[in-house]
Image 1: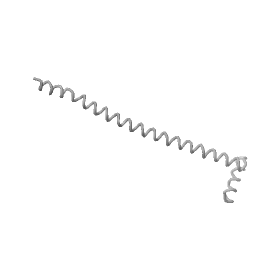
Image 2 (image 1 turned 180 degrees about the horizontal axis):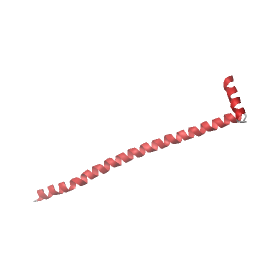
Image 3 (image 1 turned 30 degrees about the horizontal axis):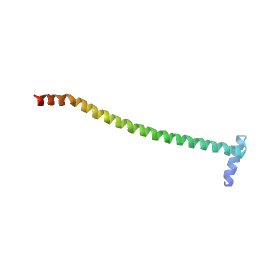
Image 4 (image 1 turned 135 degrees about the vertical axis):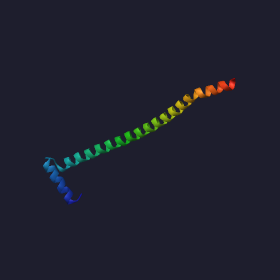
Length: 84
């Protein structure tokens, strides 16, 4: 670290009644927590994207099945006419 960074750390440490090492440990802890939160958010985002894809596929399947069910009466009528 350069001298100005060390002076800034000393100033911050003095303001908080801490040593430079205590302040650095606190900062490192906060950074680590931020990374954990970031990783968790990335995982959640991936999970949500997967769920969205599954839901879209389910909607498409249900739509196709609904169309097929709605066409059943027509198909049955055609079959009855053919059988006569």
